[in-house]
Image 1 (cartoon, rainbow, N blue to C red):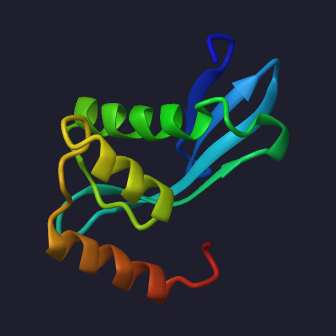
Image 2 (image 1 turned 45 degrees about the horizontal axis):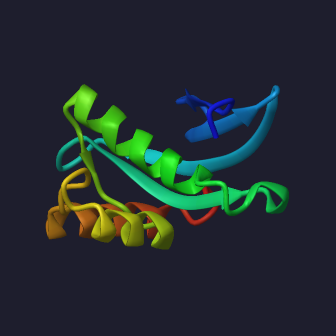
Length: 114
């Protein structure tokens, strides 16, 4: 896992794990601007040849670390990120239920986005 670079393609809404120039995993997200600013992960995908190497967990950890550095909340809708957050409460603060509802409403209003 040490050769994997994690980069944020904010314009595309993807946190990517890159190995040798190839994207081998990603978390797709959007940024919710109201009621407060939050990062909302929707999907976590790891290419089959790279599964079981800790890539998804590293992506989730970086997502929460980046949010903390930026001073924004995380409102996870991605089942993997929800599960990861439950296993790592010291790194992933619980999301405000109102913020989660706002994220779900945004996603329902933009079904073509994901």
